[in-house]
Amino acid sequence: MFRHPRTAIAWGGALLAAAALAGAPAVAQDKYPSRPIELIVPFGPGGGADQLARLTAKLVEPVIGQGVPVINVPGATGATGMAKLIAAPADGYSAAIYIADTHALLAGPDPRWKVEDLKPLAVMIQQPSAILVAKDSPYKTWADFEKAAKDNPGKLKVATVGFGSVDDFTLKHLEVKGGVKVVQVPFSKPNERYVSILGGHADALYEQPGDVAQFLKSGEMRPILIFGDKRLDGFKDVPASAELGYTVSLPQFRSIVVRSDTPAAEIKTLSDALTKVAENPEYKKFLEDSYADPDSFMPADKSAGFLARQLDDMKKAATGS
Image (cartoon, rainbow, N blue to C red; front, side):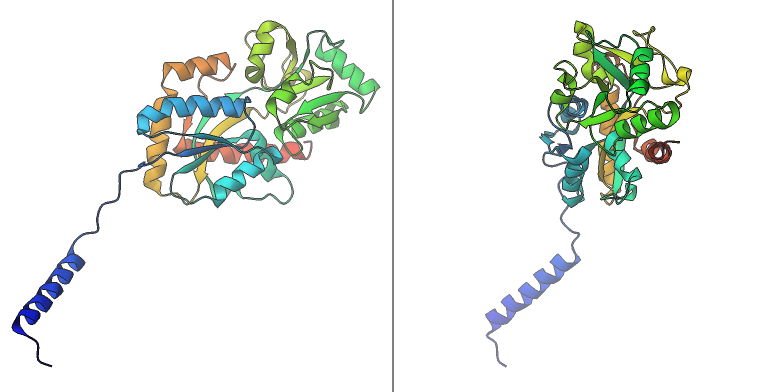
């Protein structure tokens, strides 16, 4: 087929240009992160997970140079929020607060996800849990509460975050090991759970002292039992569960996770950024005010093993052992 010389030259130029483009390196992608990172809180506003998320978002934003909007997705002891995370793309632009109560769901029957589906960026906080009562409660000490529960099995009500949680497992342990049988009253909204003992809707509250610090400081509520091996600074007159023969402790931890198939580079970027957050004086003050372990923080390379060990403990507790 005959082509005009100019047409042939143009055609040849186009082929050369195409060949050059084919041999050129791919255009570099925008540096990560190039847009805001959504931080899912699988619980309602005002609770410990929400407090952690909002402080972390505030402190990490100048480190990564992007906004971190906090999205509350409460329900099913955190399972609803985790479903949102797992359904999101594994691109490093969605993360979630992942706490012990939600992790405990994996120790129950038919969990909706596996621990292998998640990659922890960091463990941000570890706190002891406690049984707390209102200031005017007739149960002045743990001995009072324990006796009443044994004398009237199933009469006393304890407010918790939900069934299948660390709260649930701990109460089962108290029943199996000590005959302390209570009725569990779940509250999905943190603020409703906190004030349940103040309004007489529950006799006691299973919670982390740090999450209700304002009520403790005002004298509206007080702990009667701390779960763990040692007494808590500031409440030296309150016994630790180990002293009384209750070997369960299951400390509350709160971590930040992404999907496990998120690129390694993005995981490292976020974990490094959270390490800087943990070094911030404002964050250290937050741990102190929360009655938390000052050495709570663990980066990504240590967090996975920690979660695995916690799950083993939870499976034991789920059977009452």
